[in-house]
Image 1: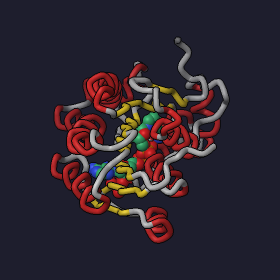
Image 2: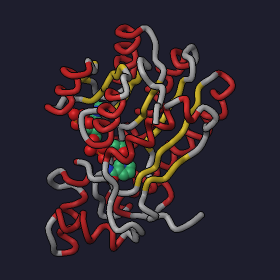
Image 3: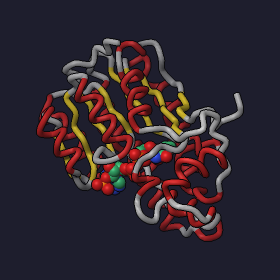
Length: 264
Ligand SMILES: NC(=O)c1ccc[n+]([C@@H]2O[C@H](COP(=O)([O-])OP(=O)(O)OC[C@H]3O[C@@H](n4cnc5c(N)ncnc54)[C@H](OP(=O)(O)O)[C@@H]3O)[C@@H](O)[C@H]2O)c1
């Protein structure tokens, strides 16, 4: 399928690993000029920089300055922005609501919600001047699930899904489409990093992290396809929504969860 994304300029947040990295790679292959933001680079992101000319900007996107710096660098480099992918988000395993203090709530909201507020605010003046501009927000099915283990993250994602809808309404008449992709569990460092959710699930189930991801999570979470999602499967949807093929799609949220969500 020809996505007609060649020479578009895209800003991707949380771009050095996981879903963000998969988006950068898939966009680069389509000829998109990508500006990738994360605190650190990785060998994988460096390889995309060397092969496709991806601009790597090392910024802390939990801060207002970080968001402004990333957008400014994109405009300095390419003179415009066509696509913004608000991918950054973070969760930490919690022992329930009473264990989460204000500083922890703020940290998760800064990373998961305010980062998208700030990059959108910085990028929208440029997106409004572009032809066929699009924002894609990476939310989560946790926005609608009652999991005490990620109480703060779920609330931040619910706020992001709401923001997605409201921005779509305000900016559709100004030529910017805004859509969300909400994954279920995806095989990224979010799960696989030491001390992450795979380790926590494995400890609770008395198994290995690998077994937790391949068997325990799909079974316990009711994933109908019997497996978690791979990062490139999320990236493919992001590219479609960012492309002119989705020119009349805005304000929607598409789940990539292998059928985990059982409601309409
Ligand atoms: N994986 C899942 O199961 C899943 C499911 C549903 C939704 N999601 C959502 O999908 C998005 C991507 O998740 P993922 O699993 O790919 O995450 P990940 O593997 O944890 O990667 C996170 C990325 O964000 C960057 N990052 C972290 N803190 C940052 C900061 N302060 N400033 C700038 N960059 C920062 C990281 O790089 P540095 O550490 O170098 O900064 C990394 O590139 C998130 O919004 C997440 O909530 C994930």
